Image 1: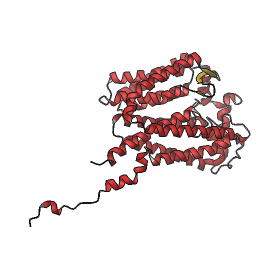
Image 2 (image 1 turned 30 degrees about the horizontal axis):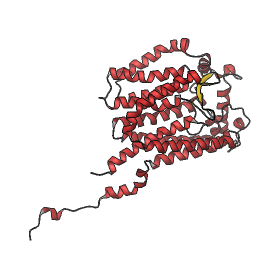
Image 3 (image 1 turned 180 degrees about the vertical axis):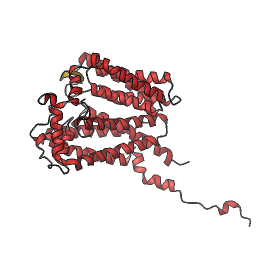
Image 4 (image 1 turned 90 degrees about the horizontal axis):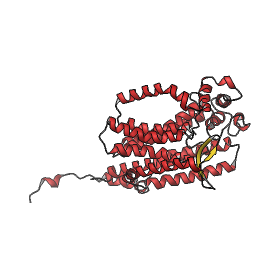
Length: 386
């Protein structure tokens, strides 16, 4: 009996199939388990802090739970959508967002000197939230089918895509949201390998535009925020009140904090907007430095996981979009903590997943749904085998 070389080939068990079975459930529902765990941890932590920051308001807590339920539902729904469909739908999302921004000027609802909302009777929302997803999605879709790094022509097209909604939102006026939308689109350009000469040129253009912006664009209250940043003590009982009380709350918490529900600055209403923009000051007062570091650690885990998912994405579109959403989330965290601690002007950016929110929470979790879809796309390719 003759034997061939094939008779002596050692065959190992198909470990790929075994590994795929281990993650089969998560792949089937299109969810990244680690990212979900990190998000749920911040959500739970945020609800604990919000209950205290709101003066133990059960109504606010229930409202936040309702919006978190909607937000996680939106995340799960978006995670089921094929990324190729999102790429094709990107222009329509962008167009719908612009139309909604236009409607704000016609039928919008005003509050605190700004017209940013559209009311549906039982509910009102900010159309600008749509653009937080639509702008980076369209820029990523545009660059995803072109040679990278982008040429000057393609860079200009992307800048126009970014500039149109940014200017419209700036006129509402809403400086914070307009900056965040501009940053989300610019991050896509940066991740696409934008040439350094364009980056340096843009920085120089921004520096040269500071004086015209200050003189002709910025509103009086926006200028006051910058002046307050430089010298909050100049108007202790007026413009400087918020940041002074915020610093007092942060400093009084020390390392261990005063204890949950026992913060004096927040419970005695010295700290304004304690349940929204300045909620981390409540956290610092009641849970101390340790509590703040725990929250920052959770944020770091979310951002690290998002960066990993975007780094291992299978297409240029998914890599650029997931990277932009992740780094924009980092900007949200950085700007909020920076303004509450007096390092940045107050621009009305809530602390993600902690501050009281509505459409902003749903928009944020929709972005994480896209990241989940990117993670699932990666696993489909690597676990599917050959």
